[in-house]
Length: 353
Image (cartoon, rainbow, N blue to C red; front, side, top):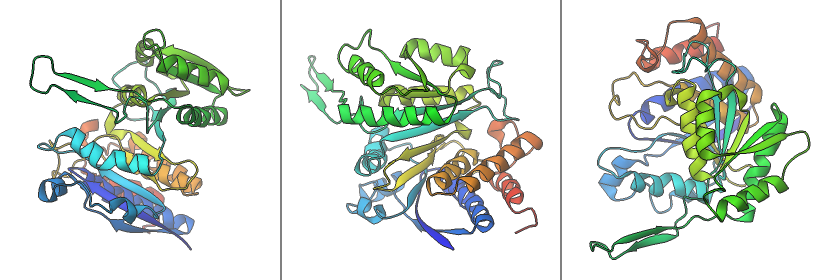
């Protein structure tokens, strides 16, 4: 029986509530398909930052470098600035492990009506976000702090290697899906980086993939008006971040949205995480929606070489949403995290395990 070693980082708030749901589902899937998952749990979080002055220990990255994958709950908590939690944990993991693809599948799920009448089951797209450079660079600084002429400079960094590899990934993905790719740009207003991005997209275009580019402002509007027309959207770090959350809201909310931070070459572990954040307002109440974490776990199974198991996990939570009234309060129901999870597990272990 094959065993995969997984680094668990529950993080903050509801992260500690949705990861047990994900691991319960993973256990059931493993029993069906003949693999096991062994977990090492790490308390890296804002709570740790407040206690010890760092989100993770100095050798934290070395501790998880040789794991097969990383499963993250959520990061962020009141009292700790967001840039501290992000740059103290998530960004070092993404950059050190060269997780340059952030993958966000967006699907309207039966039983989860979105806020738009036009958002039907025909909505099935993927945002491929460049994840380690672009607008989220570390180059820049502040000058004349506290004086009237105080200024801040933030530099965007787009490299040929960085843009090429994420664009290649997106074209390859589109070729395996419906064969349609949209590139997010703003080359009419951003004079250097975005024309450079556009040039590389044109250079790397694939036969068999119909592609176009859309200015980010128009693309945001079209995602709301006609989300069903999109298949694969490739975007820079900032544009992809914004578009993926917008698209998730169109599909019914970020509570059900998954994400993968991928190192496609598998030289380092990839990281899988729900999009919803730590939700301090409901943390500890037992009603956190586990769908985003369970879906992220299914993406992890795909990455680990168990796509059939991943498909069954997706089918199981979709069946609960489509065929029952069991759902957490954010989706209009009264179920707890545990009650929803048990329903999903039942569909993976119909004879009771």
